[in-house]
Each structure stands twice: as C-alpha cells, then as structure tokens.
Amino acid sequence: MRPRRASNGEGLPLSPPAGRAAQQRRVSLLFRDAAHLIAQRAGARVQGITQPREIVQRPYPPQAAAAPRDLETVDDPRLRHRVGDGIIVKNLCQNKAMPSPRRLVLASSSKYRRALLERLGLPFACADPALDEARVPGESGATTALRLAAAKARAVAAQFPGAIIIGSDQVATCEGRRLEKPGTHRNALAQLGALSGKTASFDTAVAVLDAASGRLLARAVPCLVTFRDLSSAQVEAYLQREQPYDCAGSAKAEGLGIALIARIETEDPTSLVGLPLIALCELLAEAGLPVLGQ
Image (cartoon, rainbow, N blue to C red):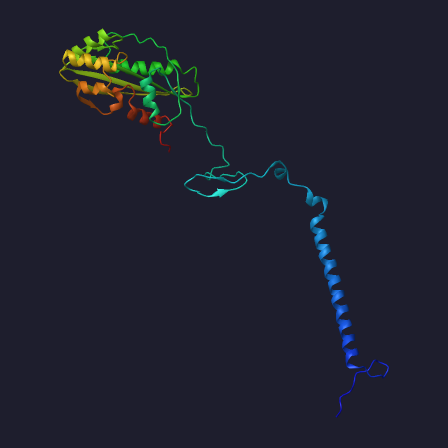
C-alpha cells in the first residue's frame, strides 16, 4: 500500500520541503510566545523586588540608628570566636545591670607599701592620711599598730565615701625600746650597733575600711628578726651602700639589709616590709573585694 502524501488543506499535495518549513514556523512561533511570556513574568518579579511598596522601604528604628561595624575578636575563654555588629556576649548576665567594682584606696604615702600593693594587680589610689602618730603610754606594739592602721583608713574616708580603704602601720621594738626611723646616718649607725646579735619585734597591722558602711576589718601580724653579730665596719659598709634612713630598724630586708639578718620568723614575709599581703587578701575578700574574683 502506497503512503499518503500530506496536503495543504485544499486537496493539493505538499512537497516534503514545504511541509518541514511549515512545521519549523509553528515551532518558532511557539518558542517566541514562550520567551515573551517568560520575559514578562521575570520583569514582573524584578519590578516587585527593585521597586517595593513604601512600607517595605521603612527601616525599623534600631536599624536606622545602627551602622555596620568591623568584626572584632572576643578574647573570652568561653567563646573564642568572632562576632559582628559589635555584639560581645561575655556571659549569660549580659543584659542585666552588673555592679561596678569598688574603688580601692591606700591610705599611705609610703613608696614601700605602694609597691607591695601593686603586686596584687588591683587598680588603686593613694592618699596621705597626715595622721598624728603620737604614742600612748603602756600600749603594746601590736595594739599601737592596729590603732594607727584603723585611724589612717578613717582619716581619708571622707575623701572617698564609697571606697574600700586600706590603712597599715608598723611598730618595731627591741628589749622594750621603740625603734624609730633613723633619719640620719649617725642615728642608723647607733641603731644597728644596738641591734647586733639581738632579736627585734616588728608588729605590722593592716585595716580594711568600707567607707560606705563604716565596717572595719583589721589584723596584726607579728615578725621576729634576729640580727647577726655585726662589726662596725660591716654596719658602715651597709649604710653607705643602701642608706635605709627611712626604715625602722635601719635595715631593708627586701634589699641588701638581708645580709645583716640571721633569722626571720613570721607567717607573712611581706609584713616586715610594711604591708602584710596575705592578711590583706583575706580581709579584702571578707570586705567583698576578692583579689582573684569569685
């Protein structure tokens, strides 16, 4: 059976080339219409994004005031990552009101006590209590030191009403005689000559005053120092080299004066220098200012 030939609708047969051309035109028209429809829909979507309604263009109030910030590194052992927009999450209490650290004040003009307190790494201010340190008859060295340490702290409390204030005092005695600061080479020479081969007692007190509440904490730390048998030449050589004329007992145990000493007996070696740090750390923690935090 012979195959039927395609016609043009009028009964006339179409040649193979003409039939293929018609089919290609129909396909071309379909592709053109589809492309036009896709372009129209894509344009509508683009227009909806690039030209939003007015309400979409209004930024929220926090966004209007904020500006982008550079990323910064958060050096926190619990986080160790980078965050953006300047937000640093330090702990779970970030949005709560955290109390500010109490101000710390040293009621002393002594460079030795200032250097000792610096060891704790706490920021502090210094204030001269300008206190009259007159003796009270019959008062022991430890009692005098405690009284004067507390008086020094109270003397500057009015200047720092909300602060934690540290006062300290030291009283040195040997065989019932008070050892004062020599002040001059001649006095130091006589003082060390009298201390040769003997034991002196250095009672150092520290007081911690909460100026806001008036609460006072205090403690006295004893220290016994036994001096070597010293020759006049040794004493002279030491005084020429260190000149400890502002130290009770005429010897700096933290310096070359250690060469004059045979033995030191104390629970806190810093007490001999003038500020017992072990006792101070305990008192600061009790006052709500722990050196190493909670």
